[in-house]
Length: 441
Ligand SMILES: Cc1ncc(COP(=O)(O)O)c(C=O)c1O
Image 1 (tube, rainbow, N blue to C red):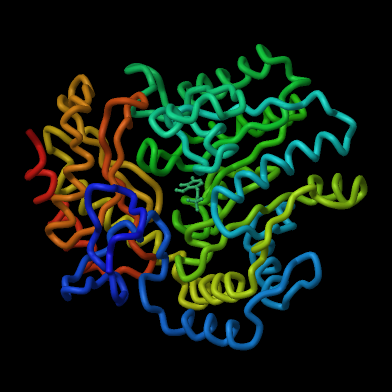
Image 2 (tube, protein in one colour):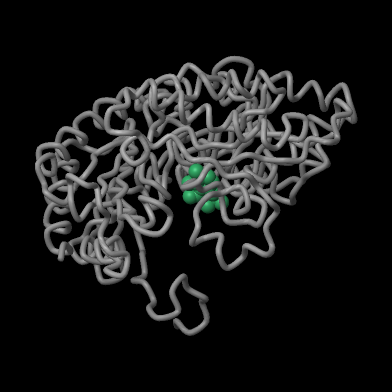
């Protein structure tokens, strides 16, 4: 066994995982790993939840698959009702996919089709942000701003305008208030719309809280509201990517609720099904849906596994458990607890420049010099070493590089399950402290 899988790295085969129990994963040698990142901010209920497993088994035994060109299912309908109910404002129609990248692709097509339905065929341009990630399929990669992910495939990608994200620690001037900075960051997006010609722009896409590329970066207060106003002013659709930060990860079903903003389209994935099944979603407002419904009558898109019944049954169980067990409240208290623990361990650490995030999507950023915020030499590959050091200690973390400018900078992302226990949060920070000390030059 073991010679045929094309693993992520061709130089090493990872250990074989055999079981999950709550916040822990267990490998074939019986080693236990505390999952401080839920894989990639996925396993929001932890591992091995018996009720979700039972819902999946029941669905698979009764009805494993139907094509959405022929049928709908009660599970898909009920999940869409719940998602629409939990989503703010007029976000009322739900299109299910099997991943976050597919949700991005569908959202982009939906935005394009919205304008076509209005006879506005000149709107073809998307404005996205640097240091962002919306998925790895070619369309999603094209609208992402992660330099190292894009570079090898750049000749295959559609042209997209990239503006700076709202990233206070890195981009605000020393004397600038958060409010002024947010306004300046939003104004740069408006300037880009005007450079392109507003009548050519179809959508702006942004992660509400930037996840893997910059490491848990929430927008400053007021920034997203300003972006919303700008999009409205020019007839541009606002797509918020909540694949990582949505589905409750920051303490509200959608993170943008905390910014007082309702996008035209929002994408979900990861925590929607909590890793029990691969499922993503595109949620759009009545206005967007009606453009299609009263126009051509169909989104010119579709995939074999849209609204997969077992995926929908799993996500329904996950979202019901989150409601019934009041886990959004737990995300808030556990997030505050984790942030406090991180602050007490790293608040005065000479190589931790920033501790940030929202709810249970948190990160620390490593710097060579706190005063100047100078990052470490990327050749040190600190983030990669942090991952292996933590792994050797039985801790799973989700570090990333290129944090500061796409090339240099290191952060460590934490995104534990919503139902993580307090004593497990303490263990995470203890092990993370040892990890950081072990990797620093
Ligand atoms: C913000 C964001 N959008 C989209 C995606 C793509 O999701 P998937 O890997 O399920 O295709 C990710 C995955 O990390 C993500 O973090």
